[in-house]
Image (cartoon, rainbow, N blue to C red; front, side):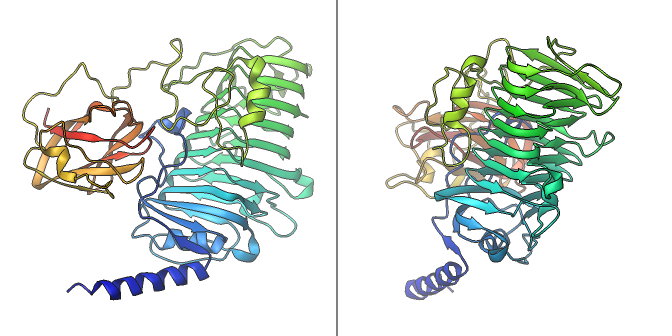
Length: 521
């Protein structure tokens, strides 16, 4: 039996009051994705969208962040946590629940998925408190500062890493962050951005890493080679002694980064690693690329880099600098598109875009910072990846057979005024559904299992091109069937399901879906 509206409202207000007292404020149930879209390797393996399509909460304490994680229906329920203020040991405690596993001395993202943590308002600062990602996937961290995290002394947190990932981590996008320390290991600090024990499909973009002995590593030892597929672009590494980054095994792509005052060594490719190093600017630094401190060599491919006042050591038994005239020792191709700024303008572009509280500005390869494109890069470099992703819409390969959506049911996220879920399955291109904002989801459902292998998304007249990034999901299992950008025909392996969902995770305006067609082949 449904309770009267007044009683339901009273209960909701009570929940809001309790949440506010704990430092978390609930907002609208449908969240926009983090600004812009994931880039680099984070776009692979199904893509990285974080908490897009889920509830949004506002947190002003670390405890509130943990409460938001623990208050979800499950450990995979999407959520965006907007953080404002200073998060520290004094306001961060362990919270228990079936959808979380947290700890008092760090922000713990353990055995969870589909989460966005984004700084808002006056900014978010994690002071002496690291962010730990373990056995988790589809995580976005954006527009935050993490500073002075220690592994020794007091207080300690997260093994001394500003952001640390370990144990079967997949699909993490860290963007427009500032990660900083106040010294090296002797002062109690460790890495700023570490990945180990089977961590893959990660992108670090438009971020500042500075004043640390160690920038970060991929692989904790010469035998920890299960990590990789990591992209670093448009980052500033400044006043770093070494590990910018250290790469043990795997593949990493570094492009359009500004490396300034690398005091001992920079990109350290070793233990069979392969580094693709494109159009970076190295300045006032030493040994910025090579294999260092080991006899287990790695390799690199170099193109378009500028070396400004860089000094090089003599080769030795445990050191193999790439300079003074760096040449490629391998070839590396990447599966995603990207736009290269010329290395000569990298210092100015990175200065205007990288770090927290910079307005999330990005570059499209024209050396001109601008507001983020919600769909991410879409104009591939014709020489460097193959743009023919089989999961992307292909208007030249139309589906055949009966449109299974006709006569089916439908539902979805909050809809804009005057629109209807049913408009996407009525065969009429003159009617449409829109989400309440720029992102949201629409589903087609049947009373019994139905085999689907292709969908066609048709935008209403006048709104063509509005849809940016998307995911097609088996609603019952959460399995991502396809991910990409733009409307059109989307193919995937045939799957039997009762409900299929099209999630819009990025758009340039309010999308208008006229038809969500489904086909068996």
